[in-house]
Amino acid sequence: MCRMVALRFDRRASGVAGALVDALVEASVEDPYLRRLTGDGRHCHGFGYVLAGIRGGAWELVSMRFDAFDGQLGEEEVCERNLKELERAAETLRDMLGGYEEVALAFHTRRTKGEPRGTLNAHPFRAELLLSVNGRPELFELYLSHNGGVKKLELAEELGLPGAELMTDSHVLTHYLARSLHGSDLKGFPSRLAALVSGIRKRVLSSLDLNLLLFSNRTGPVLAAVGYVTSKDEDRIRYYEPVLVRGEGISGYVSSTIRDLIADRGLGLEAASRREGFVAVFGPGTYELLPIQG
Image (spheres, rainbow, N blue to C red):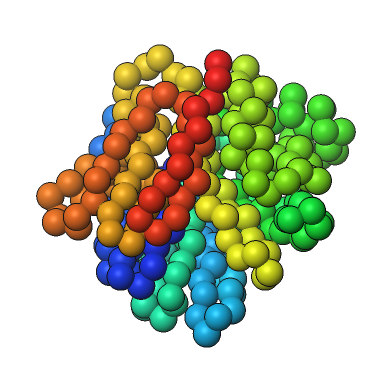
């Protein structure tokens, strides 16, 4: 159970992007949807982000993950430290945003029950794959953030992936998508992703909300989101419900709590909540939608 933003924007919208990062922090400190489901409104089990930004004609990549959990500190102490470090990381990130001409950003905060903890299990997860760009193979990094659940042991068995019981479901899913996308054409990435989600829909638990950032130094970033809610429980639907936002120089994905927080803050954003399955690919001020069948 997580809160996420995925934002593609240019310099005109760096202030709006910073406000959305602030709203992510606010939602992580107290989320009424999460409190209704679990009795605790804090997403305080770790966080992380990946940012691809261009300046001076060159793309650069920055990423970080953190979870204070070490098996020795008490749960409340870990939670408080994670929220403190989240605020610090968000402040550092906001200061960075205006220095780029264009940015692709995915930021994730986490709450989990029963899945592995620690910094190595914070999102986003990373994998490498080859994609075809203009007929030539190119090495990409794939960063994945996830809200929801999948039957990880079934996916791992299909992959022949050992040790899956020691991995998070999101980590297994990262391997699954990277291997399944490997060798495909970058132009076909959205349709291929939609087909993969449709193909594993019976292994989804409650929701499969994904933020994905593909990056190569030559091509730069591709930022996408998946929204696929399977739960029939209205409280869970309200929690997992994906929201697409768009404004001058910015578009992206935000979790439902963030939509609520920014509603009256004058950010000039159009917000569209979507309960039908989709893949979205983002550009500054625009996004393309592809439905998920099934």
